Image (tube, rainbow, N blue to C red; front, top):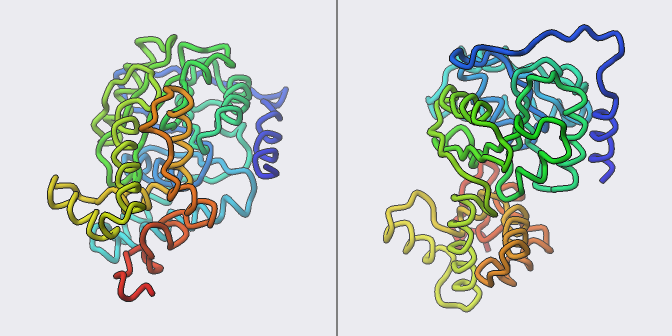
Amino acid sequence: MAAEEDLKSLLRQGIPEDDDSVSVEEDASTDVLHIGVLGAGTMGQGISEVASQAGIDVILIEKDDRSLQESLLGIEDHLDYEISRWSKTESDKKAILSRIHGTVDPTEAQNEPIVIEALPDNLELKKEIFASLDKICHEDTILITNTSTLSITEIAAVTGREDQVIGMHFLYPVSKTPVVEVVRGLKTSDDTFRRTFGFAQQLKKTPVEVFEYPGYVTTRIILPMLNEAMHVLMEGTASAGDIDTAIKLGYNMDHGPLALADQMGLDEVMIWMESLFHELGDLKYRPCPLLRKLVRAGHLGKKTHWGFFRYDKNGHIIPEEDAQ
């Protein structure tokens, strides 16, 4: 909570009185040249990397210097990993990092045509942040939230620009997943949607138009499968490895449901399930007791090296016989 309060305090600073704002209005037919990204966790890092790779300058905003440096190192480490796999070169890394500017001052993004918020799915926090961004950012700036389940309309309602607030649901890992959901709130304008849709294409993503509804498309459909796989494991029907093997090979999927949940982060998966269960009241979204048990134990998946599977320092699953 202290970290969240620090970020809120920074945002409340607003624009300095002597600031000379410049117009950020751009021809919608032209590419976006620069953006702001607020929140440099896993998703913020991925969005920043993808945007920079597309030739866009990024202002990456974090709550304090320590978190910012950790985030920038996280991007660098990911690029080093891609270099080790021969999917990127040292020149690629240098070019991508050169276009990402880190800061702890949110007012540096005040004149960006697009600002993307990439904080955890906490509705009250996002509402406070968007109310502050509305005061800080230029009147033409499009404000985007990266969320899996929350209401765009409710977030937009705290601003004075409800027509310029929209959702972009990037899926993890951002650099590898080719689709992004572009989510309209109740009052999102056609112009805002069109510009955001074009921005997604500029990022080399396949955008899907979504009208706001709890869970949108991808989250709403995938969560019941993840939850059911957890119940199958809890009931002792099959091992985690065999469950994932059956689904991967049986339905031609890249990941089994349990490894996919580990990759998403089990704490995030539980938050999404609880949100949809609260919104829709459907029992298929009630989190499996085994999921709750793992989250309470701090076994959050790949990011803690322990979830339904154990992971080595490179994020690879350790075979069950070696994980004992």
